Length: 225
Image (cartoon, rainbow, N blue to C red; front, side):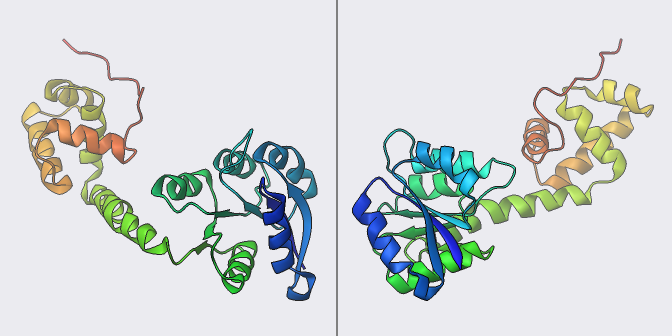
């Protein structure tokens, strides 16, 4: 049996979900919560296999509740169930850690399939929002991953030059730190620009921060001279 917790501020919605997710189909509703705050307080002790989480609720909304539940040592899989398909809700749920997203007008068959998928460790996106997830991936995630691959083209010395450059070091300071000629540093910098496909020093520094080469607040190198 898949042990399910229902989180929705409307009792009639919870009752309808409980009828769909019946023991005859392999489900047991072990908890019902009327808002996100109750879910955060009670569900960790109950330990359901999956939470069906509404978004728009009083006291604590579903996105905040999802984030808090997923941040616990033993995070519970969460399937967001909502009438709202806006991008703000979709990305908020994904960023909070939800493993799936289903609209309330989905068929009973789709809901059952989604619950089984997420409870089993998979993911589920409602067909109405799946194209937007794919588009977002193509526009943002995939290009970022491809960009990150450019770092693999750098030599160890070029990595060192990029890190120092991102921390604000001049070519002369980099040369002093690495004990090489300043002309050699200039050659490395030009090579870095070409491999990262950036136009100038500022763009290279932004690239370094965006891809974790250095972190904000990193200690700058000591000034020389």
